[in-house]
Amino acid sequence: MISTPSILSCYLLLAATLSAAEPQTGIEGVITVGPVHGGPARIGVPDSRPLVNTTFIAQSQNGTATSFTTDDQGRFRLSLEPGPYTVSLKEKKGGIGRYGPFEVNVVADQMTKVEWRCDTGMR
Image (cartoon, rainbow, N blue to C red; front, side):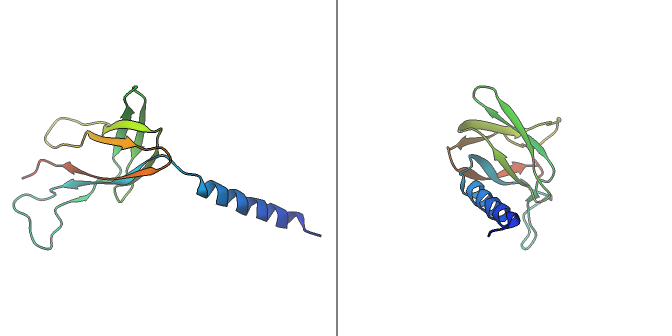
């Protein structure tokens, strides 16, 4: 006789396996910013860094907007419907620098991988 906990464990394992196998649609990647110091590039000194804890808006052509925030490594993952999107900084205050917009085309049943670099305007 199979015990109830064993059946439940099998069901949970099956459910986890099936949900992991389902394709996802959206974008994922990393956003960096640079240059991070003035003057010429220096050998052995990074000229960019992850853009951490920063909120962006992904807007579709029909006007639907979804926000996301980068993590402490500048990474993000966002589920979106297929189609073209424009991604831009949520709250850009005046000053120099360019933080988008970035264009991306989301393909059905796949996570579109991106690496975007924002420009601090520092020279």
